[in-house]
Image (tube, rainbow, N blue to C red; front, side, top):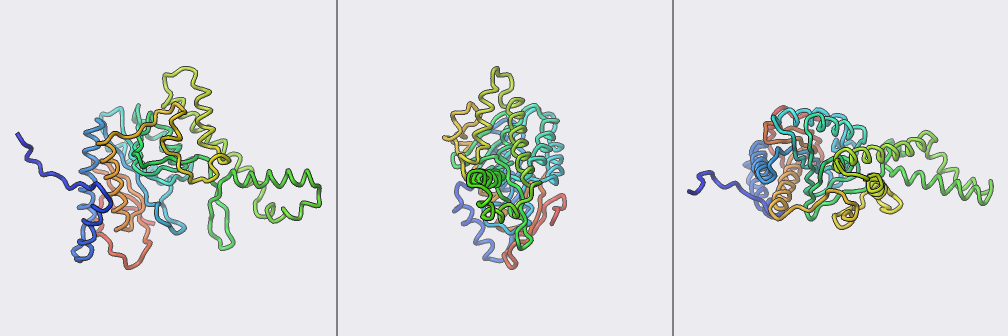
Length: 339
């Protein structure tokens, strides 16, 4: 007997999304946040049915060029969102987390890992597109990671905020600062005091406490990921110390990757014994659809961060980036936090 349930609208490509949303925006009819949420929820439900466990969604807008101050990083305010997400799930010892994020603060990431692990025995991460920096650290706290074939993780070497002449904060890889100091120290030691004037601008630019912060940040990211891998992804396995050390060394090696945003795709990670795999065809299609719907929502709304589940949670943070752009009518509950 055929199901009487209406088939949901599916989006296999970004072109499908554009074909759907552009005529609506051009017509002036508008579309509500709840209508777009229904599209995403339909996709989430299918992922849950396929995976057999609840799905929590944490996604931010970051692939486009973003102005300073956009609240799209992992920070302590995410404690509120993840507390709502885990409280929405009953009677499950296992959960999937769909993660799309550029990263953020390691201390905030540690809080989120603790929140999830206080509730769930198993946490599995699904990456539809990108999870960089502290978001990669977050994913490495999982029992497993599933990547869309186009998805990537990134290095976990920390970045530190440095003030610019304009009074803005620019994030710089901590290792690049340490490398600069190390190079200056070696040349001055080799060539003598006469080489010092050439490096005074570098020394004046960065304070000694920043130098110490860089070293501590490197140690923290390595310690956290090493601990999480031992507790979760390598749980129950023997003699894992060397494998964990090798994997953490690779993820944190700025001198190898040379860019903090260097993509670490599946073929680069297959030799470390980590529980990372590519999604099968059906899950791959659903993960890509979830990304299309999330990114599409970000592009037609002022939202830059979302916490969502199929259990009544859907809220996030807004940031008005472009004035005059057609916007969706916001009808998300509870009332979105704004900045």
